[in-house]
Length: 300
Image (cartoon, rainbow, N blue to C red; front, side, top):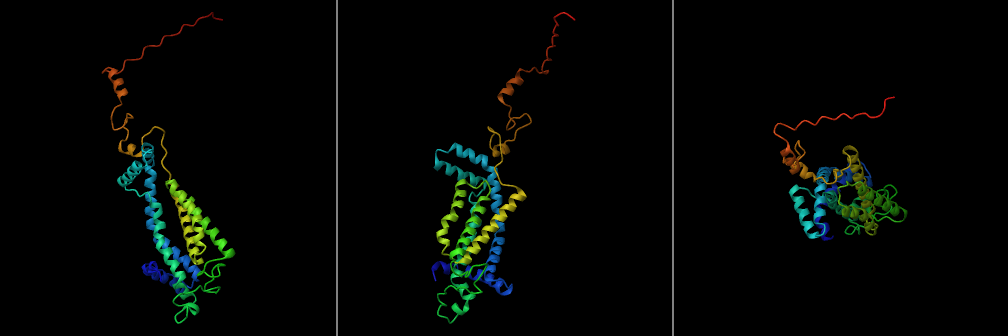
């Protein structure tokens, strides 16, 4: 067994136990058990998703200040990166928060990958790969059997082929694109482009993955899309706050709110101070009386 599989063996045993619970106790098929395993994993990641959402809200509030830094140091990329990192640290914001749920799912992904190639093959078809068989050490795909079949997929432990493969690839790409398009507007443009390109980059690799792994991937993408849609419907899209041209950034307005006279920091503008100096102490003089215009012309 590869070294990476040995490192993940505790996780493999843990997730395999969850799958066996859904299959043996709840009576689900192995394919449906993979879907419910996905639900369990995503539900466990909800606190991390909430943290991600709050970080994105903070980024939305800080967008005016970020644009000011980009305009100030746009010609010096190294200085801009330094100032941006300092700015994020001062405001305790993680610009890569949108990647956290994806990174947290990687151990699950790799564990399920090895399970479908090793442990689950022994569980799904013990007559072929069980103890005492010639394939126990190196399990082979279960083949088109009732236990390995799921929603038109002949064998979830083997890679899909033909029409089944085309359908799975289309579902994977479309679900991945949908979840990327529903990302908040605060996600950096370069990150968004990477997320949009990833499903097409992964196609040459996923066609060799066990079909059950694609079932997991499509399910988790669908969960992400529904979750982001519900967030947009309940709290609205996360977008940077609008501000009029020429106004200071949001942090400046929060740190130095204007006083009643309209000045910032409570200071009186120089032009207004001069205007006040010209006004007598007793108050401004009354306006001159209007002169009545004489009407000319003959009366009719």
